[in-house]
View 1: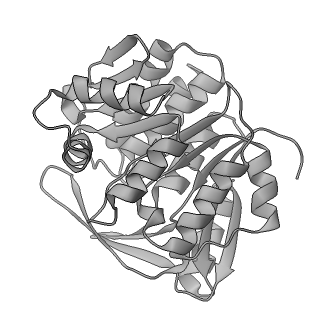
View 2: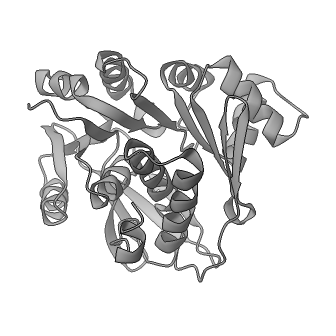
Length: 296
């Protein structure tokens, strides 16, 4: 593998079975796709089954020009039943013991880790010990340095997380991305009751020696905390088609902008605008408008 600096999304790839058909889903693929739209080298790392759904995932990624390191394993390709409520907010039924729960740590994956400058991982893909061990090994094999980013995008889903998994991930990451509802849940687990959201963020930032903490609060705006500093951007009012993948596009845009030398404020503003744009489109992987892409 050549010594490029890759931006990697590692974890689940699956089909979201939506009311109007199926769409490729999973935060890592959404993240890697949006990073690639900004012209950076990205890779999706996951596993699929030896089945039609798995082949269709590979075809879909190929058509999107996405680079992948995806193993075929003896488990079915992941699916999620998605119901969308009247406000466009998704509700997920995530099938268990599927391919992405069983991601092997291979030599190819070790080589990729050694040439990765930024990785995004979540809690869902760590529900099974096999993938959890692989993700941890990947994080441990990445080079250390000021421009190395390990982004833990919490993505709490359906009780597929434990305090231990969250603790371990917080210790391994240097950027935390969390939404306001997740922050309440995590604070309850960690015993930070009764203090306001911003104070909780400062505590997490200091306790885990994070470079940054990104807090998204839906229509109430978003914050980026860095030691001694805070950036706040209001959420634009847009016509929402659905919110699927909006958070992933935020994370991808933010890290792409930081890697391209933008300030935290500039990266934050662009991430908010891209995320709002994605909300106006159906599904998690729309093509970002040229106007937005040209801002980077």
